[in-house]
Amino acid sequence: MQTSISRTSSETLPNAESEQNLGQLSRISTVRRTTGETDVHVTINLDGQGNCTAATGVPFLDHMLHQIASHGLIDLDVKATGDIEIDDHHTNEDVGITLGQALGKALGDRKGIVRFGHFVAPLDEALIQVALDFSGRPHLSYGLDIPTQRVGTYDTQLVREFFVAIVNHAQMTLHIRQLDGINSHHIIEATFKAFARSLRMATEIDPRRATTIPSSKGVL
Image (cartoon, rainbow, N blue to C red; front, side, top):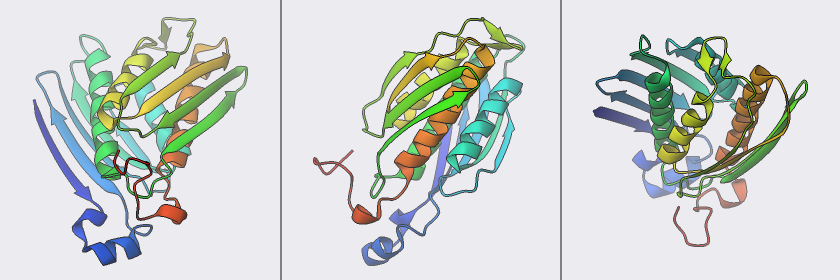
């Protein structure tokens, strides 16, 4: 496996200039992850406008990546090739891994971020609650009850695998709760929308402590 990472952030500036411009710099990272099963390239801009280019070979996953970008106001460029002739599992998981790595790198030491995010998203009869914390401690509590095995050709078991991958590699705590819902597509899409809005909240810069790490320990 090969992983290459590049990042544009305040880490490249002298301390005084870094503190002055923390809220103005684009937090951008690029990660490419190559294995014997997949080749995934992700570029993320946390201070974007919701633009998304997604070409993973898994149409429903592309649709969900667009939800993350649009509702999180994150610019995303995701390209992947994988062994989808077998199934979508490896591509789905490795996109989650690479996106998690890119997210973690774009955040850097997490100085100045709000850190916590939460949102409740309705989509017709579905209602999904998401809460997350960029704690540095990976944990997923997953409470979806998706009634069908597939949405189109997408295996709905892969939703959990996608979030496991992001959580582990972005080092966040993530809780997902299904408050209502009977339509599989609605449940999954509301989950991604709630995740996106929670992500947006958590990664925003808190102007009251824009130059400090949001932890009583002083490190995340």
